[in-house]
Image 1: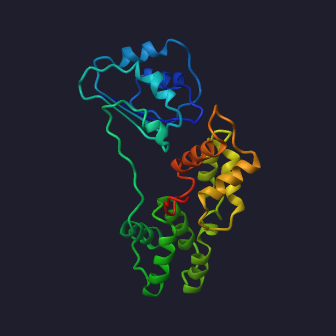
Image 2: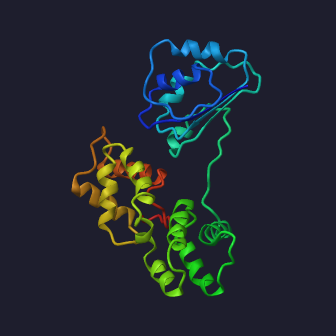
Image 3: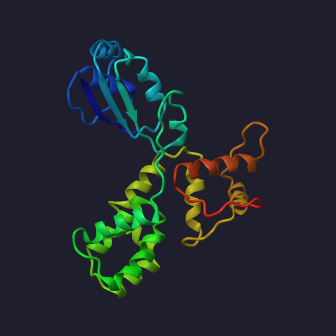
Length: 262
């Protein structure tokens, strides 16, 4: 059985993937940007008649999969291709017979279990910190990354109620306090936003921490700032709504509640 696990660089060309897979290695790691025409045929010949599992992690552009799949033989022998993506638009373009697994937010119980483990691991959780700990955990809103970053901060500092209260009051600020953790993730997502969405996302930083922002107000502000491009006969407000939905689907903002009046 041929097994291949690939971490796809975010500017990956499909030729690079073909080159690595065509090599027939049992264990593949990072794919650099390199390749030459004709590798597709080599890949097909290398996999033909074999049972293979190919894992392509973190796809940002469906075109890489579209170009690659034609060179993967379907011998109906149980071979599988697994790819992950944080973008819904990519997942929705998977083949109709694909099995799609959407990750959900953690439940409160799961969040608390993760929080406890990351802060204290095998140590017992001090009773005097349970209440304030749960307040901090809830402010992470079921996001594993937020929980892990905050828990890491708490684990590395003094475990006093006073300190934890300070953290609880400024959870969002503490989440981004380590530029090597959370900010890198935000920067990664931001860098791969389409150019027309970047100013819209950055504009959200003008609002106070943790506010509920009226969708209608936000759309008007985006239009007034000149962030919205004309697309055919559609109104700027309609285009702005599409922009917002795109940002939401990328998990860069959280919908607090839905109302008919926006």
